[in-house]
Image (tube, rainbow, N blue to C red):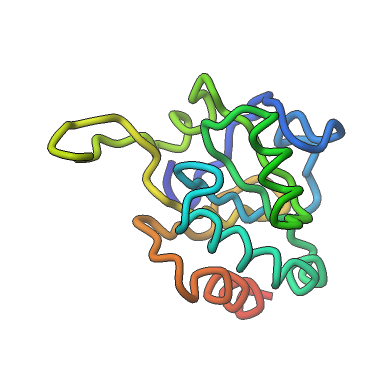
Length: 153
């Protein structure tokens, strides 16, 4: 996926039973952030940073949605443990991750594995990708995304 592309209308499981496809979010901007794994240090910090700015995103007509390969049960526990107020998509079959091109080879303990590259997409109210942040460094990222949304509005 690239800037200017329209996102595919995929179906998925999420922590919000009212959100089972991207068309359920039509009319709102979407911050779609992909992260490797629930309850790991970087992913937890990223989730908390988006949590702390959640109201500011809502004021900009923007829904924050996180995506990882964790199970729905894992996501529900992760949300509960860290008071995450936004929706998480469970992408165990990697359908969403593959559509957005975020599955990459990673070197983990001298072994190559396939994993999620931490990436964020800003999607407009019509489902068009407006900005992409690849290879995200967590510190300050949520604020940078919010700043980009405010600058675009």
